[in-house]
Image (tube, rainbow, N blue to C red; front, side, top):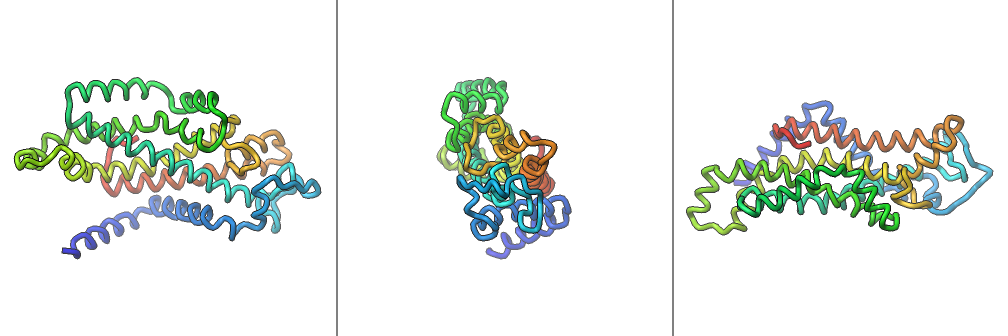
Length: 287
């Protein structure tokens, strides 16, 4: 009995590993995650995360000592970029950790129960989908004091809607399938049908969308920080670093370009990984 799951897992890994872009995305994500976890041990100047100043070393270009150069107060940009990856990844994990369960439960309820449950949930979802996530995040972040927690809440306030619509569509297709009718005939509870019959058939779509969403959440979080509504200095945040470095373009280009490249690198990794998972599971319409 244990050989079948192992065989299926091996077959899925074999198919996934044959996709070059998917493997590139996986390598990028793994590198970024490991770098974020090991940041205190792999960065040359971990004390530069805080309010450190060294005006003698300000605006130094990239070199063997300072790989990404230094900023306007002499802090090592490479160190701050690596620690900034922590903030971006934490933001994605918390936002999607809120949005995915909420969206999944609402989508299954609307798709399976139908009637007024479907009407209320999907009309609220449609209204929320009409509001651009970045605009809503800007409004929430502007009302609340700008910090990491409020940035997370601002982005999560609308992100659940995409998962609700996706799971609703899948559940509507599944609720007429024979295995659902068989479970109902045998007297299975609604909870059992939703979480033991329908939810496992949504996992592949959720996995694909989660990977793709990580990149978008990171970009939205960076946009909030760039506008001054995200993480506040001296905490290293990639969007904030891009905004601060933009004041010194083009003379000290590395202060803005290199943190911006880190955002692009991380978002690209998640998008390539998501595309690979979509090809693996043959999932459509998850964006």
